[in-house]
Length: 179
Image (cartoon, rainbow, N blue to C red; front, side):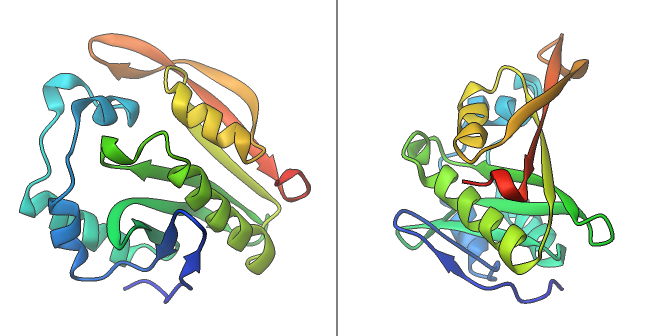
């Protein structure tokens, strides 16, 4: 079970530890194949959120030491995580995902990212956070850039999606660059 992370609240979103009742929250989301593709899944592997899938999401988040549920208007709509935290080098990788298309394009994900990044830099004293994002995921790239992430490189043909190779962008953010 994860360490109890603080609940962090912004104007549009809050990020908080996962709860058992989030199974019902994730189950109620309107899942979408386009979102599945933005995470690197192919159309032929898309499956709607079932109870089993929702239970798996909740278990995975509960077992993760640095994972929050993104909440908007009292509904669980996604997740944000610090992965591969290395306190020696004061670095981590980052992941964020909103699972329901009705909540995209409203600044909710960007705000959730800022809350988690502020915690990472100010409370955990991390120096660097990196992210990999599919080069075709323009919405995510813009959100990362709004938070100060810079493109540091491109990993060519690193993801096989919909029977085609796609590039990953490698983005990074240093503590002094966070805005």
